[in-house]
Length: 300
Image (tube, rainbow, N blue to C red; front, side, top):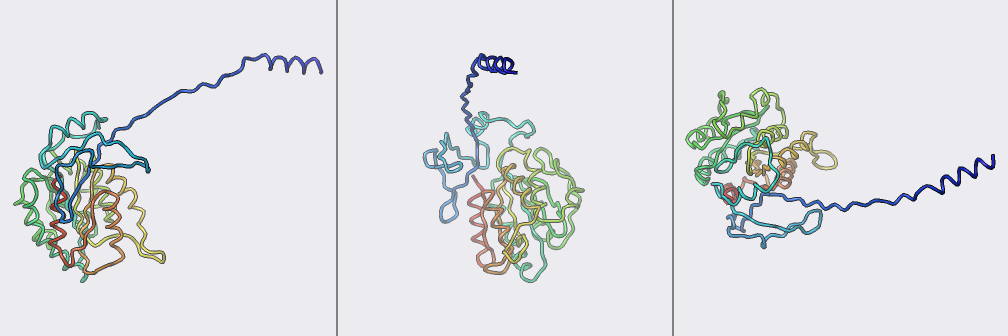
């Protein structure tokens, strides 16, 4: 037994020492993000350069390489910047003009119907503040998601939807638009099976994601979430919707139609706007001011 043990120990001792190997790797990520800068009056601030922005990622400063202003038309500089980033093979060609989706959360309750009617009356005039090349799509949600219009630059087609359609009519069959289209990635069967405002936002976001550029969703509604002993909590459909909105580069601008200084369900509107880079505004006192602020943010 002893010779065997000694031989084993000698064999182990004679093995060459294993030197640890280290590899040095540095990953540099470049991201293009959408930033909207407005002054106290809600007007877009133009002429900003990279030096005017301070960005932190997980608390650490990140270098801003360039800042490029985009209006309704696509700038060559933005295309050059986009060309340096990883391409999305599923992305459609970059459209001229902005993409704006109106989503009306319809309710006939006494504390909501007045605000909804006011916004439906005021919104057609707001369309005149958009660039002629901006494309607008219109949806509404009551018991399920309704499609009123795919992306269009034809304002005359949109005005009757705001003034009569959303409140008083049923949406007619809508054909996908030529070129830039939401309905190319979204079917009427899907929308009929969408029974929550959170799921509606997710469905719209997924249809927006293949389209290039930044997108804006104007959510005119009364809110969502569930009020309980610990306050308002988001339903299970919310997290997938928030992730889809961020992936689509879609900012949600929430205009609250509820006739109150505060109510519990506004927490959902505030949260989705905060997490996607939009803003929340109440409309029961100064609806024109909320629309003016929106008009200042959307151009660039």
